[in-house]
Length: 207
Image 1: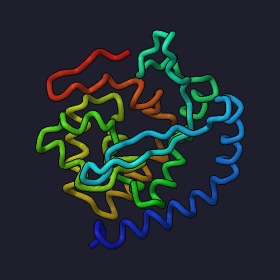
Image 2 (image 1 turned 135 degrees about the horizontal axis):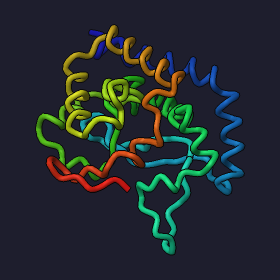
Image 3 (image 1 turned 90 degrees about the horizontal axis):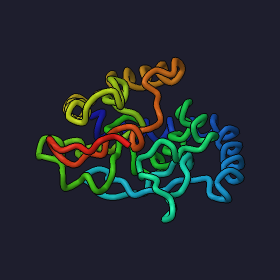
Image 4 (image 1 turned 120 degrees about the vertical axis):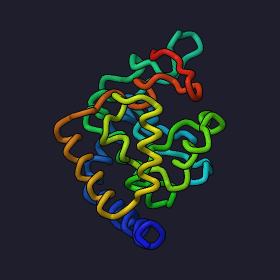
């Protein structure tokens, strides 16, 4: 009952409240990034949602654009701007995903939405992570985040999908808040520190 009836209503109500509370910070960051990023404060990217259906995730833009005449790797942490590093330090780049929650694309808690190109690489068990809406935070994020392997991350995601409950979601939200306040397991971001996933038993080296 919680997953199908209560969770969605709770997510949208909490997201609306948090957006109101954070609005002064969000407006301030938008103006700062308008200047830093030459008029482009937001980062939009297609990610797989529930059942693998694509949606556009929204974040504050914290990285420099790729340039054809630069040898920047897509996942290179050196692309993060100085302002972006501060924003990521406090996980503020993720706050705009509350808009995705209001739109019904995401949940507060769920497996993190990864890259579209990973979709054909999951095995049957790993694909179970897409049975629910992706989340701003999740069971893998409060149990090691990027300090754990891809296999461990997917195992934690699937475990969450099979054990969803209000108590578990509440536990994850509390642990997330504590980790942000303590700056524990907070790093440059999943797409910059984790090695690119090439499929099961095949990984590329970190940038």
